[in-house]
Length: 497
Image (cartoon, rainbow, N blue to C red):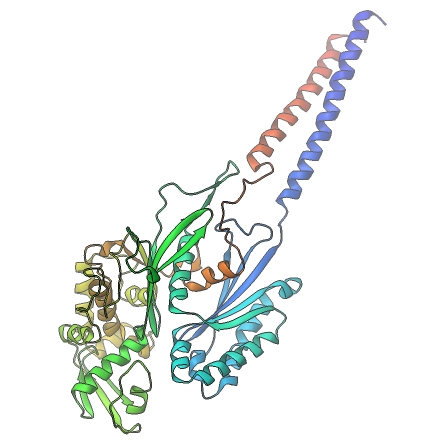
């Protein structure tokens, strides 16, 4: 064998060795990349939203080991509990517990058996239970005990049933919106956690059945410190103004309008300007005055009836709605909302959800509409006869349909004259969901209690990103190809080998 052949043999051996190493590296890379792509396994969490008019169970999931990644928590399902809110079970506390079982069964089917014991379950009760606690603290406690007993019969990690304060309800709704829309933090493809430069932090407007909440970041520090809540999220501080108005939720407001009319007219037949012409509603005085939100007359017969007849007059309806507010009292003029409550000037964009969304969506005004169109739409709708309204919306439940005029006038009044959105109406978006998840306090509540949000800036993500794996695989594959090409050429060019 000549020297040239020996050199070619050595080169061929070297090329073959490089090719073998490259092949081994490629195999290891593919194996590791495949392992990285395997589903990490999901964790689950559940929250019961025990509102004043109904209860709903929200089931969430997120990839295991990625708790601090904003946006990784997703909504799996929502189960609406049949019947009224748990606060209505004051006379029958065990009934409140029984009402939850169908939704617990649904959640049990949705969570894998091996994950159920590690799935936290919370029940948060809101304004309906706050009102029941004011009326009868013993019954309120009994209702919470019964729902707790029911949930504890299931193989989940039950972590308590409690009544949320209005401040908590507003603050957790604010967290939910901004978490879902990545206002707090983003994940970049360079493997770093980033605070979004110039991110719009949204305000939250929640309209429930018994209370309503507002939460936002004011431009200036709050003049009334107790009205502000400070959150430290992902290394940044957020000072949030939030206030909850008990008795100003949609259902309680509708009752208060009836009570205002009754106070001015003690007959059994009363015209109601917020109801459509031709509509009639008969209620007992016992039902009318059952709520602690309504001032009761000194004497009345609970069994006596009163009938409200719709007159379909939006201007008189507005005048009636204004009677349940006090727009003049203010300790920090002009920084007040209504009833003397301090509020700094609204700032930024807002998401209005819950009953806000359902009312404005029904009227074709969601997610946003100019104020002149809002006013003209509400005016035209309120002037329609009850017969026309029912014919135009045959699938809508009548108990919802009857209140859309009144609730629309009420909500525009609280937004414009209460919260003072006169100059910034276009900053309000009426939304039900964000990132395919229902907006409300439940997600923010779970994120806080399960430590799914970091107070400090998370460390940079370690490991190799998908783009880097792809580049590595390409170059290794190219090296393998080149090695075999050189080897083939060597054999081709040396016929004496």
